[in-house]
Length: 270
Image (cartoon, rainbow, N blue to C red; front, side, top):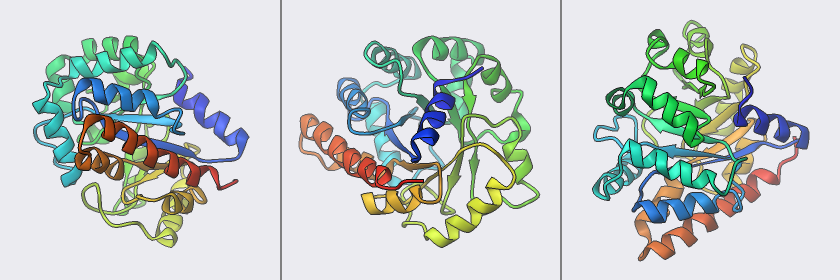
Protein backbone atom coordinates (compact mmCIF):
# COMPACT_ATOMS: atom_id res chain seq x y z
CA UNK A 1 0.00 0.00 0.00
CA UNK A 2 1.60 3.27 -1.14
CA UNK A 3 1.60 6.08 1.40
CA UNK A 4 2.11 9.84 1.13
CA UNK A 5 5.67 9.23 2.34
CA UNK A 6 6.36 6.80 -0.51
CA UNK A 7 4.91 9.25 -3.03
CA UNK A 8 6.86 12.19 -1.64
CA UNK A 9 10.24 10.44 -1.79
CA UNK A 10 9.47 9.17 -5.31
CA UNK A 11 8.62 12.73 -6.41
CA UNK A 12 11.77 14.16 -4.81
CA UNK A 13 13.91 11.49 -6.47
CA UNK A 14 12.48 12.49 -9.85
CA UNK A 15 13.25 16.14 -9.00
CA UNK A 16 16.80 15.17 -8.06
CA UNK A 17 16.86 16.47 -4.53
CA UNK A 18 16.62 15.41 -0.89
CA UNK A 19 13.76 15.99 1.54
CA UNK A 20 13.69 18.60 4.27
CA UNK A 21 12.00 16.93 7.24
CA UNK A 22 10.94 19.19 10.10
CA UNK A 23 10.10 18.14 13.66
CA UNK A 24 7.91 20.04 16.10
CA UNK A 25 6.12 18.96 19.27
CA UNK A 26 2.33 18.72 19.26
CA UNK A 27 0.82 21.35 21.55
CA UNK A 28 4.03 23.37 21.96
CA UNK A 29 3.61 26.01 23.31
CA UNK A 30 -0.15 25.43 23.01
CA UNK A 31 -2.57 23.76 20.60
CA UNK A 32 -3.45 26.78 18.46
CA UNK A 33 0.14 28.02 18.08
CA UNK A 34 1.40 24.54 17.22
CA UNK A 35 -1.34 24.27 14.60
CA UNK A 36 -0.29 27.58 13.02
CA UNK A 37 3.32 26.40 12.89
CA UNK A 38 2.42 23.04 11.35
CA UNK A 39 0.08 24.68 8.84
CA UNK A 40 2.89 27.05 7.81
CA UNK A 41 5.66 24.46 7.46
CA UNK A 42 4.81 23.19 3.94
CA UNK A 43 4.96 26.72 2.49
CA UNK A 44 8.25 27.20 4.36
CA UNK A 45 9.62 24.20 2.46
CA UNK A 46 9.01 21.21 4.73
CA UNK A 47 8.60 18.11 2.57
CA UNK A 48 7.64 15.85 5.50
CA UNK A 49 6.53 16.92 8.98
CA UNK A 50 7.35 14.90 12.08
CA UNK A 51 5.13 15.70 15.06
CA UNK A 52 6.20 14.72 18.55
CA UNK A 53 3.80 13.01 20.93
CA UNK A 54 4.58 14.55 24.34
CA UNK A 55 5.44 12.04 27.04
CA UNK A 56 6.44 12.36 30.69
CA UNK A 57 9.60 10.24 30.40
CA UNK A 58 11.30 11.13 27.09
CA UNK A 59 14.54 9.21 27.65
CA UNK A 60 15.97 9.62 24.13
CA UNK A 61 15.38 13.37 23.89
CA UNK A 62 17.79 16.16 24.70
CA UNK A 63 16.91 19.12 26.95
CA UNK A 64 15.26 21.27 24.24
CA UNK A 65 12.80 18.60 23.12
CA UNK A 66 12.21 17.48 26.71
CA UNK A 67 11.24 21.07 27.54
CA UNK A 68 9.00 21.21 24.46
CA UNK A 69 7.21 18.11 25.68
CA UNK A 70 6.77 19.60 29.15
CA UNK A 71 5.34 22.82 27.67
CA UNK A 72 2.95 20.74 25.59
CA UNK A 73 1.83 18.63 28.54
CA UNK A 74 1.37 21.79 30.64
CA UNK A 75 -0.88 23.21 27.92
CA UNK A 76 -3.09 20.12 28.17
CA UNK A 77 -1.85 18.19 25.13
CA UNK A 78 -2.92 14.54 24.92
CA UNK A 79 -2.60 11.92 22.22
CA UNK A 80 -6.24 12.57 21.39
CA UNK A 81 -5.62 16.33 20.91
CA UNK A 82 -2.49 15.51 18.89
CA UNK A 83 -4.61 13.51 16.44
CA UNK A 84 -7.12 16.37 16.37
CA UNK A 85 -4.25 18.71 15.45
CA UNK A 86 -3.42 16.51 12.46
CA UNK A 87 -7.07 16.19 11.50
CA UNK A 88 -7.38 19.99 11.39
CA UNK A 89 -4.15 20.28 9.38
CA UNK A 90 -5.53 17.79 6.85
CA UNK A 91 -8.54 20.03 6.20
CA UNK A 92 -6.20 22.36 4.33
CA UNK A 93 -3.40 20.02 3.24
CA UNK A 94 -3.91 16.50 1.94
CA UNK A 95 -0.44 16.11 0.40
CA UNK A 96 2.29 16.70 3.00
CA UNK A 97 3.26 13.48 4.80
CA UNK A 98 2.85 13.48 8.58
CA UNK A 99 4.91 11.23 10.86
CA UNK A 100 4.13 10.83 14.57
CA UNK A 101 7.26 10.40 16.68
CA UNK A 102 7.51 9.39 20.31
CA UNK A 103 7.23 6.56 22.79
CA UNK A 104 5.06 3.47 23.00
CA UNK A 105 3.46 4.13 26.40
CA UNK A 106 0.91 6.74 25.21
CA UNK A 107 -0.05 4.52 22.26
CA UNK A 108 -0.41 1.47 24.52
CA UNK A 109 -2.53 3.46 26.98
CA UNK A 110 -4.74 4.73 24.15
CA UNK A 111 -5.14 1.18 22.82
CA UNK A 112 -3.15 0.04 19.77
CA UNK A 113 -6.10 -0.88 17.56
CA UNK A 114 -8.05 2.27 18.40
CA UNK A 115 -4.93 4.40 17.97
CA UNK A 116 -4.17 3.00 14.51
CA UNK A 117 -7.78 3.45 13.39
CA UNK A 118 -7.93 7.04 14.69
CA UNK A 119 -4.44 7.91 13.41
CA UNK A 120 -5.22 6.65 9.93
CA UNK A 121 -8.51 8.57 9.87
CA UNK A 122 -6.75 11.73 11.11
CA UNK A 123 -4.22 11.53 8.26
CA UNK A 124 -1.10 10.06 9.87
CA UNK A 125 1.27 8.45 7.36
CA UNK A 126 4.10 7.08 9.50
CA UNK A 127 5.24 6.26 13.02
CA UNK A 128 8.64 6.52 14.70
CA UNK A 129 8.47 4.84 18.11
CA UNK A 130 11.92 5.16 19.63
CA UNK A 131 11.57 2.61 22.43
CA UNK A 132 10.10 -0.32 20.46
CA UNK A 133 12.90 -2.63 19.24
CA UNK A 134 12.56 -4.92 16.25
CA UNK A 135 11.93 -7.86 18.59
CA UNK A 136 8.57 -6.26 19.49
CA UNK A 137 7.20 -5.98 15.93
CA UNK A 138 3.93 -7.67 16.88
CA UNK A 139 3.12 -4.87 19.33
CA UNK A 140 2.75 -2.03 16.81
CA UNK A 141 4.97 -2.32 13.72
CA UNK A 142 3.08 -5.10 11.95
CA UNK A 143 -0.41 -3.81 12.90
CA UNK A 144 0.61 -0.33 11.68
CA UNK A 145 1.79 -1.68 8.34
CA UNK A 146 -1.46 -3.62 7.98
CA UNK A 147 -3.34 -0.36 8.61
CA UNK A 148 -1.40 1.38 5.82
CA UNK A 149 0.87 3.39 8.11
CA UNK A 150 4.64 3.28 7.57
CA UNK A 151 6.77 2.11 10.50
CA UNK A 152 10.05 4.01 10.40
CA UNK A 153 13.03 2.76 12.34
CA UNK A 154 16.13 4.41 13.74
CA UNK A 155 19.68 3.34 12.99
CA UNK A 156 22.65 4.81 14.86
CA UNK A 157 26.46 4.78 14.67
CA UNK A 158 26.35 1.76 16.99
CA UNK A 159 24.03 -0.25 14.69
CA UNK A 160 26.55 -2.84 13.48
CA UNK A 161 26.40 -5.40 10.67
CA UNK A 162 24.81 -7.95 12.99
CA UNK A 163 22.03 -5.61 14.13
CA UNK A 164 21.27 -3.80 10.87
CA UNK A 165 19.17 -6.58 9.25
CA UNK A 166 16.85 -6.64 12.29
CA UNK A 167 16.46 -2.86 12.12
CA UNK A 168 15.66 -2.98 8.41
CA UNK A 169 13.25 -5.91 8.69
CA UNK A 170 9.65 -4.66 8.42
CA UNK A 171 10.83 -1.02 8.13
CA UNK A 172 9.03 1.11 5.57
CA UNK A 173 8.74 4.71 4.39
CA UNK A 174 12.34 5.65 5.13
CA UNK A 175 15.13 4.84 7.56
CA UNK A 176 16.03 7.53 10.08
CA UNK A 177 19.80 7.56 10.66
CA UNK A 178 20.70 9.18 13.97
CA UNK A 179 24.09 10.61 13.06
CA UNK A 180 25.44 11.00 16.61
CA UNK A 181 25.21 8.60 19.54
CA UNK A 182 23.35 10.21 22.44
CA UNK A 183 20.25 12.33 22.90
CA UNK A 184 18.73 14.83 20.49
CA UNK A 185 20.31 18.25 20.08
CA UNK A 186 23.90 17.00 20.04
CA UNK A 187 26.77 18.64 18.16
CA UNK A 188 26.76 18.71 14.37
CA UNK A 189 27.70 15.41 12.70
CA UNK A 190 30.87 15.03 10.63
CA UNK A 191 29.84 14.61 7.02
CA UNK A 192 32.61 12.10 6.30
CA UNK A 193 31.53 9.87 9.20
CA UNK A 194 27.88 10.00 8.10
CA UNK A 195 28.80 9.30 4.48
CA UNK A 196 30.72 6.17 5.49
CA UNK A 197 27.79 4.91 7.58
CA UNK A 198 25.29 5.61 4.80
CA UNK A 199 27.32 3.64 2.27
CA UNK A 200 27.07 0.62 4.55
CA UNK A 201 23.32 1.09 5.15
CA UNK A 202 22.48 1.72 1.49
CA UNK A 203 24.22 -1.51 0.55
CA UNK A 204 21.64 -3.30 2.68
CA UNK A 205 18.39 -1.48 1.76
CA UNK A 206 16.58 0.39 -1.00
CA UNK A 207 14.73 2.55 1.54
CA UNK A 208 15.44 6.30 1.46
CA UNK A 209 17.69 7.30 4.35
CA UNK A 210 17.10 10.54 6.25
CA UNK A 211 19.74 11.89 8.63
CA UNK A 212 19.00 13.77 11.84
CA UNK A 213 20.58 15.09 15.05
CA UNK A 214 22.74 18.21 15.17
CA UNK A 215 21.58 20.01 12.00
CA UNK A 216 21.02 23.69 12.77
CA UNK A 217 21.84 25.73 9.68
CA UNK A 218 21.08 25.78 5.98
CA UNK A 219 24.72 24.92 5.26
CA UNK A 220 24.63 21.85 7.54
CA UNK A 221 21.32 20.79 5.95
CA UNK A 222 22.90 21.13 2.50
CA UNK A 223 25.87 19.00 3.56
CA UNK A 224 23.51 16.21 4.62
CA UNK A 225 21.40 16.60 1.47
CA UNK A 226 24.50 15.78 -0.60
CA UNK A 227 24.77 12.30 0.90
CA UNK A 228 21.28 11.35 2.12
CA UNK A 229 17.70 11.34 0.85
CA UNK A 230 16.56 13.57 3.68
CA UNK A 231 17.75 15.99 6.39
CA UNK A 232 15.79 16.02 9.67
CA UNK A 233 15.76 19.08 11.94
CA UNK A 234 14.00 19.26 15.29
CA UNK A 235 15.98 20.77 18.14
CA UNK A 236 16.89 23.98 16.31
CA UNK A 237 13.23 24.58 15.41
CA UNK A 238 11.95 23.77 18.90
CA UNK A 239 14.51 26.15 20.43
CA UNK A 240 12.97 28.99 18.43
CA UNK A 241 9.70 28.39 20.28
CA UNK A 242 11.45 28.40 23.65
CA UNK A 243 13.25 31.70 22.97
CA UNK A 244 10.27 33.57 21.49
CA UNK A 245 8.71 36.42 23.47
CA UNK A 246 5.23 35.68 22.17
CA UNK A 247 3.32 32.95 20.39
CA UNK A 248 3.16 35.09 17.26
CA UNK A 249 6.94 35.51 17.34
CA UNK A 250 7.33 31.74 17.82
CA UNK A 251 5.37 31.02 14.65
CA UNK A 252 7.35 33.56 12.63
CA UNK A 253 10.73 32.44 14.01
CA UNK A 254 10.16 28.72 13.42
CA UNK A 255 8.94 29.24 9.86
CA UNK A 256 11.82 31.62 9.13
CA UNK A 257 14.38 29.00 10.16
CA UNK A 258 12.47 26.29 8.29
CA UNK A 259 12.74 28.37 5.12
CA UNK A 260 16.51 28.73 5.61
CA UNK A 261 16.94 25.00 6.20
CA UNK A 262 14.77 24.12 3.21
CA UNK A 263 16.75 26.47 0.99
CA UNK A 264 19.91 24.68 2.06
CA UNK A 265 18.47 21.28 1.17
CA UNK A 266 17.07 22.51 -2.14
CA UNK A 267 20.40 24.05 -3.13
CA UNK A 268 21.80 20.54 -3.65
CA UNK A 269 21.05 18.68 -6.88
CA UNK A 270 21.46 14.93 -6.72
